[in-house]
Image (tube, rainbow, N blue to C red; front, side):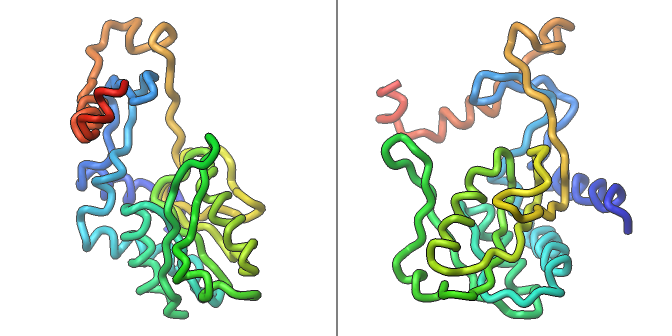
Length: 215
C-alpha cells in the first residue's frame, strides 16, 4: 500500500471518530482562521481504530529493537500504549509531563521512570499530533540527558513541513499541513462564509471558572 492510499484511509478513520473537520471556516483558539481542524481529545476515542493505527506505527519500527516507548499527553499516551503492545520488542511504556518554567516550555519525566532509561536504552518517541516539533525535541533532549538513544519518532499526524526533528526522521500516518490566516487576510471571510466558533467556545467552557475570571 503506497503512502497516499494509506493516508486517505487514516483520514477517513479520523473523520469517523469526529476528530478531523474539513471544508469549514473555523476560528482557532489563537484567533487565526482555517478550513481544517483536529480535535485531539477525539483522536483516540475509538479503541479498535487506535489499536490499528498504533499497530501501523509499530510495524514501521519493528525492524529496530526498542526498550521504551515515550510520549506526553493523554491522547499520545493511549496511542503509544497501542504501539508498545504491537511492537515485537515488547517495550516498556513511559510518559513525560508538560509544563512551563521561567516562561519556557519543558517536559519532565516522573522520578520513578529515570532508572528505566540508562546508557544505550533505545527509545521510540510517539506523539498524536506534531506541529512545531517542540515537544518531540524536548522529549529527545530528556532521553539523551539520561543517556538513552532515540531510535525514531512515530506520530499519527504531522502538520509541520519538517521531515525530521532532533535529527530523527518522523514517521507519520498522515502528513498534512493546512494553512491558517489572520481574519483580515482570510479568503473565507472575504467570500462571506459563516465562521464556526464552536471549538473556541468548547475550550472556554472546559476552562476552570477561576481561569476565565483572570482573563
